[in-house]
Structure formats: C-alpha cells, structure tokens
Length: 324
Ligand code: GLV
Image 1 (spheres, helix red, strand yellow):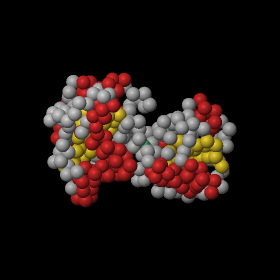
Image 2 (cartoon, protein in one colour; image 1 turned 180 degrees about the horizontal axis):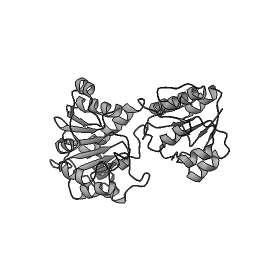
Image 3 (tube, helix red, strand yellow; image 1 turned 60 degrees about the vertical axis):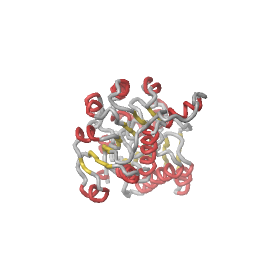
Image 4 (cartoon, helix red, strand yellow; image 1 turned 135 degrees about the vertical axis):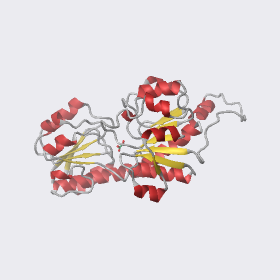
C-alpha cells in the first residue's frame, strides 16, 4: 500500500506510516503543491491513499487521474471545502478530516486575535519598534473592555464552543447563531441563540467558526457590516471567503466597524492589499491549528483513518460513511 502526501507533514506522520508498513511519496515542500505537479505525481496510478491539505483542490479531474485504486483522501485539516465529497463518494473513495484535536488551539488563536484587536497590541508594538513611544499617557491607544461585553459566535460547532468557554472565563456574555439551535449547548454553557441579524446588531465582538460552503460564502458583507456596532470587532479563524474581503475593507475604512482580527483570507495566500495598511487590523498567517502538539494530533488522526480504510474499516472521522 502506498500514500501520496501533498506536502511536508509533521515527522510523526511519516513514522506512523512506516510503523504500519505503508509506503509513501512526499512532495518535498512546505508550501502547496502546484496543480500540475499534483496531477503529474498521481499519474503513476499507484497510490491507495492521498494526504491532502486545505489548498489542494480534490475534484473529478484529479480523482480520475489518481486512478481506481485510491481508497481514501485524508485531509490534514478540519475544514474540507477543498474536496468534492460527492465525486469521492461516487468513486467509493472515503474522505476524512481532523476534527476535535484542533478545536482548543483554533479557539486560542481566535481569542488571541480578539485580545490583540481589543487592546491594540500590534499598534503598540509598532510604536515601540518605530522608536515613536515617548512614555505613558492617559489617552494613548485606548482599547475596548471585554467584561460584560457580548461575543457573538457564528457557527457553534466544536471550535465555537471552545471559543464560548474562553469568553465566559473573561466575564463576557455569549450569543450564537448556527444552522440549528443547540439546546444542550445553551444549557451547558448558558449561551443564547439569536438569528444572524440580531446577533450582528447586539454583539460587541463577532467571531466566525462556521465551515465554508455555498451557504456561508460571503455570509458577512456590506449589509451585515451595516448592522454591526461602530465599536464592533470581527474575528475570523474559519475560512476567508465567509467574509467579503473587499466589503470588509470598506467597512473598516468607513468606521462602520472598529477592528478586525484575521487568521484566514478570501484569496489566501494573497491578502487584499489595503488590509495590510489599516491600523486596527491584526493579521495572522493561518495559524489556527499551528502548535506542535495539535499538528501531531492532526496527522495522527489522518494516518489512523488511512490505516483503517486500507484495512476496509471505517473510523469516526470519515465524512462520507456511505462508501462503506
Ligand atoms: C485549518 O484551517 C483547518 O481546517 O484545519
């Protein structure tokens, strides 16, 4: 059995494959494999599994080239908007992702961005770096309090719940919007369901935790920014395209919202140029799950799924269980 790995992964993953007696070819780059190289690599038709990452488009063309012997595409991410699951299912190919293990790290990153925007950390850092700081003043770089403020969570899945717990620890009120209300989460965490418009107009902070899908693409744009408070801060650690990035720039420039903390971008890795020059924007290069422990846990899950599927077994992380 042989796996194609579309770019460098944590060493643990390679060790686990070796221990299981599974061979692999690895595209030797930290960065995304160009499509032409991906296609050329799969042409040999001798891979039984593919480890993909969030920028690898797995579609009908690629699957046809990969061949009939492919049994699983293991996405090294919790999000899987890059994969055409229906096309995989049609061919009997299982698709797995890496949920749960990255929820805490991703919520930590969302909360880091929330604090960094609220307290203007990067502006302060730059002031010092540029030798422009002349000392403490009563009015310098005043930010926003967290206590008693309302955090609106859009997408109350596993990461959204972790985010809620962090906010509650900071004495914030938490409201949420989700495809379906979640009474159990409401009872456990004391959070309140609101429709999207109510959430946007009531929240001091809005944090996105929904998957990208046709229904959530550009969920937040001009109309939504108009509903938000002028003092509101938006945080995105989900997928860039959930926000219309050009309309975000306009909302920030017009003072319709106060700040944005972004870990993901609509045209990643390209960043809408203006975002780099707006002072109350904090940018992170898609670091949500980027801790050693979390990335190890993610690759462990991906390899576990591959081992199971190559032995004709399913696992909890298979997204299209109908293939079994
Ligand atoms: C990262 O963005 C992921 O989906 O795991």
